[in-house]
Amino acid sequence: MSESEKTYTNGEITVIWKPGVCIHSAKCVQGLGEVFNVNARPWINMDGSGSDQIIKQVAECPSGALSYVRNEKISKAAG
Image 1 (tube, rainbow, N blue to C red):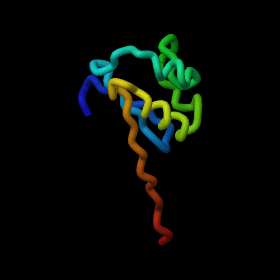
Image 2 (image 1 turned 90 degrees about the horizontal axis):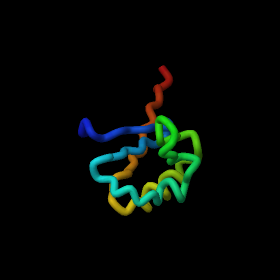
Image 3 (image 1 turned 90 degrees about the vertical axis):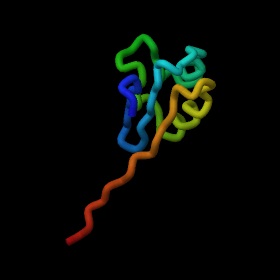
Image 4 (image 1 turned 30 degrees about the vertical axis):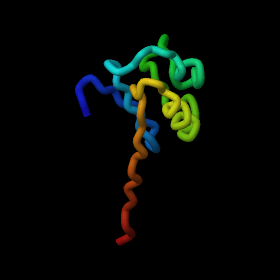
């Protein structure tokens, strides 16, 4: 991950934001304002909506500045 990339997680998924790539179309803010709010810090609130809705909105990013990864679930084997 580049130093200019910012990550935000809810445990299930992690959203990656590349500010240098962002064209400020505001599609994220207009589409899912409870998660993407430029007036808040941090500006991405992963608790604002469910993972599926966040994934759908990230996919709408026209510049590719927003992306996501699914976090691996680590389970402990019964021993």
